Length: 141
Image (cartoon, rainbow, N blue to C red; front, side, top):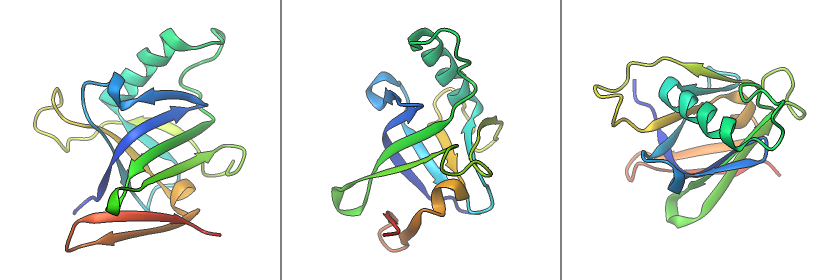
């Protein structure tokens, strides 16, 4: 099975932005039409939990209980696309959870992976150019 990934430039959880400059590894998003919500590979989940636990404005907030995710990815041609979803717009499908995957031989150097399901995909059209291995995502009007 091939998974198509896009490099993430920035990602926000509940409006708090995590710049890829703050992370030692690349962050990539993978689209999965068989998934409804959003999954973070376990090492990325742990990083996000630590990152936001020290940065939370409201110390009573549980960092595990995210209500929105927004990310920026670089597309074919160099343009930037913002992909987002939240519990208010999609209460039945939106969630953020960790997942344990064995995709990489060395977890210490593997990219951080965020898997985006139908709560994101249903908002537009994903196009993948198989020859150039580049993708674009366009929101429905």
